[in-house]
Image (tube, rainbow, N blue to C red; front, side):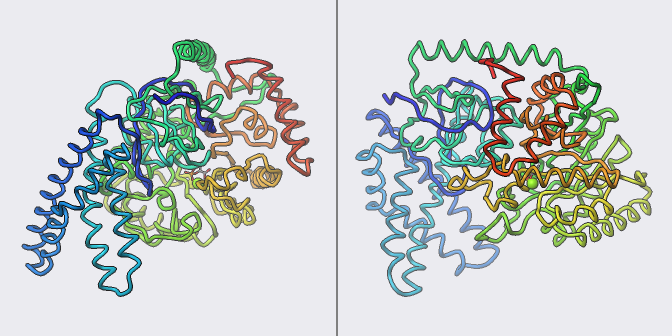
Length: 583
Ligand code: PEP
Ligand code: MG
């Protein structure tokens, strides 16, 4: 049995204990785990079942293509089926399972790699096409095995700790969140969308655990400490006891803070910071209580689209948005227009393979081209506007032209709805996300063109520092405490004051209580964070005067490198928490 611990970086706080389940959930790594001697037969059995299911599905496809396109096009499926019956390929996979003691998925992947490496190197298009014909049906088997994998977790009871090669949104939504005790991954950025979801769901999550999958076995008991940054394999009774004791005291502190959190976040000298929440789905409405928050600062509507198999209709969207607005009972509710692309691909909306997706086709760039998509969402939103205090936010704005174009479409949709007799709010506030350097440089003009701005620091940091938020090789360079970031935040806050328009920060850096204090000192009067961070931020705001926050901001802005910034942060953190072990 594997023992010992693996270090990593906590990206969502908390401790957990439970059986591990290794998952494949894109983009490219196949889960590999070791199987015990007595589990070899089980894996070979899984392989045989997957081969049968894959053969049946190929047959179904053949029939469909035969009736829609004819016998010639249907022929390939007959070939694919025959390839899966090749006894030598089957033997190679079985041997890989029993000799290397690996799971069926990993053994099938070995076979595919072998096909591609040998035949893919041969000259000539027809040979390469043959190579792909030989490996394609095995990808099919792989898909079936991976589906089985999900079905297996769903059949079991109790919570699991998911382990993956890379933290992606698909890993976070692999099983319903009630079943998730924690998520651990070999790779993943602190501000990647997978991490954003983990914080939003309130699930402990740790990334950067190298060689994790090679040391885990399916079902192995592990302890995850995302606060201190390690995964303990097969923990001893003493280690379990210690973890549970710490978990209890952290939860005790959280409960006490939650009790205090019902009143607004007011500094001792009377300044009230508006605390809004970021949510990703209607289910998140249960994760906060209305009296504890001042509204929704960011609803990432793309996650409503991600959890489905096809685009939601106008009616479906309208129902969802209406539910959110009614739940908020008149509090400000900011819905962001669809921000797909990049690391948020929709399974049913194929985007081209891009060498640099972060600089590619995403956010408003997609919806301004796919007008129908945008119009359906705008119609649903505008129809909802009469049910509460709705505000609309535009993602990934890079130019004033995009805002002008959006206003035009907005007006057309509004007129269309009025013509159809739908009541709509006339002056629905429209805001722009500031998350791209060009938007920062154009901030004054953008503020004139919209009703409010919200700073998306997850992306702004990535684009200002030229560091991909998803790339583990440069994650150490992704530093929200870089002085350039504070200068950018300062410029935006000043511009908003000059134009007398509201500015908020909805990027995840605002969820750190010390950064929240800094934002307050920079002049932001509202921030938006995942619900679980609200009590901690209220705790910090109630212990810092506005004057002290301003002095802190001045000190940070006068720093010319990151060392004094880190020192000032440590000082404020110490003054708030001292040696409190539960923090
Ligand atoms: C951001 O970029 O900070 C943001 C809030 O948007 P997302 O994380 O969804 O890209
Ligand atoms: Mg963003």
